[in-house]
Amino acid sequence: MANQNQTFGNFEVKGFITITPDTFQIDLKGKNTPTWNYSRINMKMEDGNGKSFYLNAQDGFDSINGKTIFAQIKDSKEQLQIAFADRNNSEILSYVDESSYIRVALRKVEKSEGKKEWEYNNFLTLYDAINFLKPRLETGMKLSVWGRTKYSPYNDSLNKEFQIQSIYLLPEDDTTTLGFKFYQNVLLTTESLIDDKWEEEGIATLKAKVIQKVKKKLTVLHIPLVIRSTPENKEKVRSVIEKFYKVDGDNVRRIRLEGKYSVGYVSGQVKEEDFPLEVIELINDGIYTKEEVLKMYVNRDYVDEMTVIRPVVNKDRDTNKIKADYSDTEYTLDDLNNLDKEPEPVVIASNQLKDDDFSFLDELE
Image 1: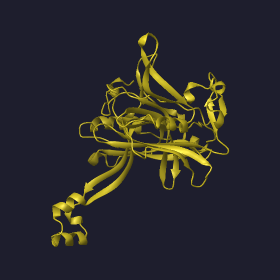
Image 2: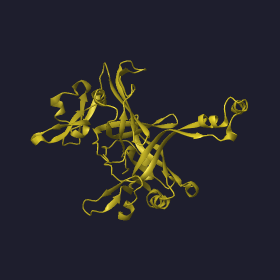
Image 3: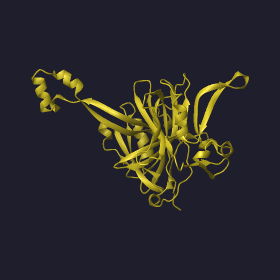
Image 4: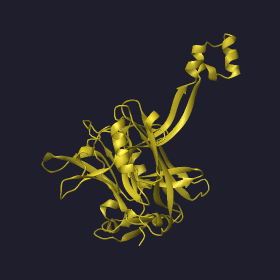
């Protein structure tokens, strides 16, 4: 029987937030549907070294019809359908499993024996979580944001929807790496790896596939992934490529990858020979010097890249051995054309390896 599972992924953002007038947009009205009421959060985060990254999410409801919330029932595989107006009904919430909540923890409170523990605020909708966060988030807070990533086609590009599941205030002495990461299950075939630029540039690409539900129909989407190396780690990265990203024959490899989002503008000065005629005339007329033009005349290219760091690895509880999270037997080429249902989501736990740490290669079975 064909495998009809979606290939889910997660995102993880860790950084210092900057609150601006546009961070929170509360109770907006839909342009095409005036009865749609929604709130949006636009999180500008920084890694402490001047690099910024952005996370945007929104949620709302119909002011006339409300909306239906789907929540997992405790100790069951069944789901509970909750009317938007009943989302705070304590009797109904008593049946909801903890995994269905968006969890927010911004402070510690004293419990028994003077011990301080995190105060968790749980919400069934991101709309309520955004409204809760607005008066409480402050510039400079060090946050960890975790959630699920869903993809959908948009014109000729790929749209990423970040579904926030938790927001935590990180301790001041937390030393984990800051940045915008992803943990994504993808499907690779023999045609996925493109490495013609590897020898000269140390760059390879993966034409990966994911299975996502789009307009209630499971669809195969293409996600371009980039593998980058440095002169120092080029040999190790190549060994990872050979072992995990090269697929033989008719196999379809499901592999969970750890990577980082690189989103923003990259600037680079143009060369003097690239100056247009009108700029050369300004220099010749003495209005600007060549140096002044070189400083201000820059190319700005928008970059939206998913850069692979390494395969996600897990430790087997029984054998205590390290294993990369991949399989060549879960999917076949026929599966990509036989899709009709959505499975239960899989939650991925992040590891704390540094981005240039390939020591797991020595421990793999």
